[in-house]
Image (cartoon, rainbow, N blue to C red; front, side, top):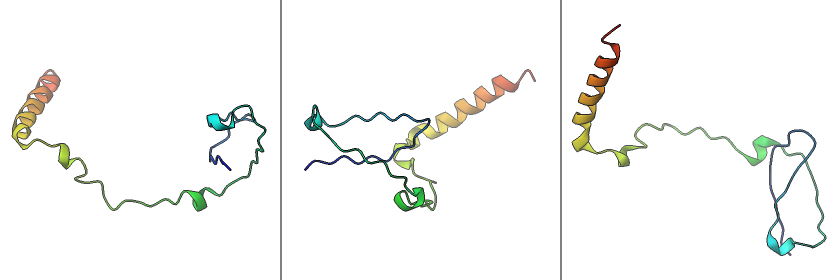
Length: 80
């Protein structure tokens, strides 16, 4: 038996579902039950995101980026 489970937020009174092709042109039973968000989507706060983009950094470009940023900020705020 193939089953489809989807947890979604309903706005208004209409719901549209996309079903797998295996269920196309078949009789199905649709059951709608309210869910407790906390029970199905536990929220865990990560300790810190600091350094999470480190793998994308290029140390050779860091000095150049700082110089370009300083020049750009200087140009933007020079007339103020």
